[in-house]
Image (tube, rainbow, N blue to C red; front, side):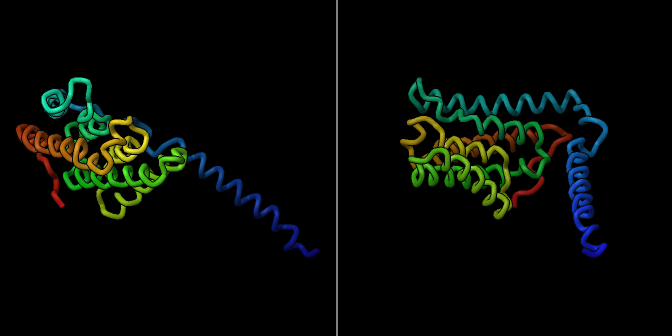
Length: 199
């Protein structure tokens, strides 16, 4: 056995130790301070936008659907409200991302449910993972889209009964209402402009 063979395991152990050290160091985060504070005016505009956007959906829901239905009030639209009203400058909040991300994810979710409903343990992760990959590929990444894909798979019987109609109602109608309210409210503030870009 030559000296190079004796050093190989030690060298490999050193590389593994270095990799683990770098990996664990990443868990500390990059910045030493947390997020900056948000001005009271900015908080107020975020509140007004979210109240009006979700309020419009709630009003439409109560006037268009049976009283027991809350179909227009899916959780992922609440998450979108955080982005389009609370962080309107974010690339993830722009109209292309809001509309494209939800519609694409809803379609993926419904198809995964229709094709794989006997195996929910497979259809749920496949829907979310595929939605993320397709949003990346189409430059429409919108985090609440992942929730929309999951809702299509794990939602109620009412959601499942819609089939591909789920893409249009509640998802399509919901995102268009949020977008219209975002365009109207976000541009009332002199400090805000929405959108940053359309395409």
